[in-house]
Length: 438
Image (cartoon, rainbow, N blue to C red):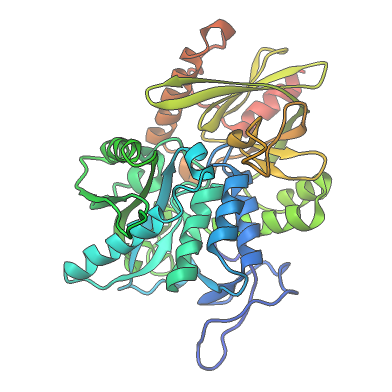
């Protein structure tokens, strides 16, 4: 796991005498610690974060092609965005997550570009009208290409600082599978918003949800009524609730420094375009990673259950075949040839192309090349990289949620006869078993 914010930087800078936000330097990316306070990021930095977050998303978190289109349309080269370390949160500043959910196809058509900003505005209005201070920080709801990007788009427009962390460490199929929910942080209100229409108006609802499942169900219903996209804001709290320098307990509520991890990984991908160099970069960070398999994508199949797209990616190298099962995000890797598990969620199952070290999500595989500039066609050679779950995700409640989701996915593919895991087996143990047996 990430033990503290000094392990995974974006870059280290020191404050000047006036304690102002510092501008980043090009030559400090290798320094493995942060200075205090807020740091400025450029559009180039955000592109690094998008690439890294796509890799960390375990096949989910939306298409990187879509995210890059959003970034190009909604962030200008001159925009400056800021992030803040989890140890430096001001106690009385209000926090919320802002997210975008819905149909990638609709988003490629241009929908969803204002929905998340509207959710931010409505949460801000809700707080001020309730006698509270406006939002001072935003936090990504997960590590995935689109929802790691969305807070920075708002930062570019509104000057809000983004917390260097998230409550998942990867992308998750359901809102109930975040550390915010596992730690029973107050969820309400949940605010849902549509895009702004041609007349300058948008729709909104303020939800007092029974729990995270209820909030997600209402969000999906709202999205279906508004071009299959919705902006979402929730978990309003204060800096004191997440500041890691004042409370050890706060560290359990989210995973620190994942934005910095995404920046480092994305920078290597974008600048080196070397698969082997990327693996070396990945190995220099925690959590531990393993190359599970290398081969050619031969098939992608999707089926719908309970309102979700579940699917299977088939990868083969001629000698062996691997099935990757997903519910938006990859949750299970199964070696068809050897009839054994390779990885089980909450461990991550991540994709990267061997030719140029580009990350990809399930949504990018065999997508519409006319819409998606990062379409990954069948027959692309990829590496399947397993990433050990952060220790905080090895929570019995969360593990049970993963196993339930895996059972649902396998139930949609009965002809494969893949046994349902009786328990979660950590990736490090599966790797040892695999090496001993084979």
